[in-house]
Every structure is written in C-alpha cells, then in structure tokens.
Length: 140
Image 1 (tube, rainbow, N blue to C red):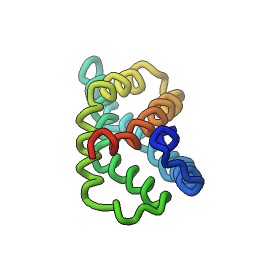
Image 2 (spheres, one colour):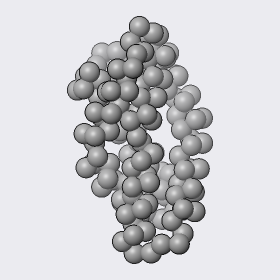
Image 3 (tube, rainbow, N blue to C red):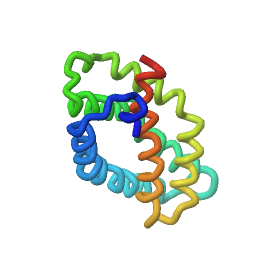
C-alpha cells in the first residue's frame, strides 16, 4: 500500500516483503510474545499491564524499523540509499508513533486473549508497515 502511495511499486519489493513477513516476522513475533509472557508471569495488576505494554513497544524499536526499511530498499534494488540515514529515519518514526503504538500494544498485550495476540499484532503491524514505509517521506 505504501509503495502505491509513494508511486514506488515494484513486484520484487512486494514479493520480498511478503517473504520476510511470512518467514522472519512470522517466527519472531510469536516467540517474542511468549518471551513477554515468561518475563511477566510474576507480576499482576497495573505493573503487569505496563510491563507487557513496554516490552511490546520495545520490540518495534528504531533498529527494527531501520531493518524493515533496509529490506524495502534491498527488494527495491535501491542500493545507493542504504545508509546510516535509515536508522535516523527509524528513530524519528519510532518516536513519532509512540502514543499510537503504546495504546495499540496495551490493547494487544492486555486485552486480547493470548491466542489472538499474534493476529492483533499482525493487523496492527500491517498498518504500521505502511507508516514505516511512508516514514521516509515524513522524516528523511
């Protein structure tokens, strides 16, 4: 969707990001949620909710966003723009989305049953993937 918005559609980008999403991200995210559950098992109440939310928020950090942008550039064959600037864009993107990501991750981690967290996160991540791809327009 972001590729269409920015008029940068490329079949290689679409197929490459589908491959990354269906392999790397599909393995990472559920494992990270299980890790959050293990790290939070000894807490209750607001401390549990806050910890789970912050740990989920920390997952999609500036480095993760920069990696996502890196994959986009690789699959788009835009080698010349793979520079440290990608991390700067990832940092600004992360900082700008904290309020929305905090609320969404709170809902996903604390209101959805465990079996639905991956689906909830996948839906939110799909929306955020559009934002991350557009973040270069906003923050570069």
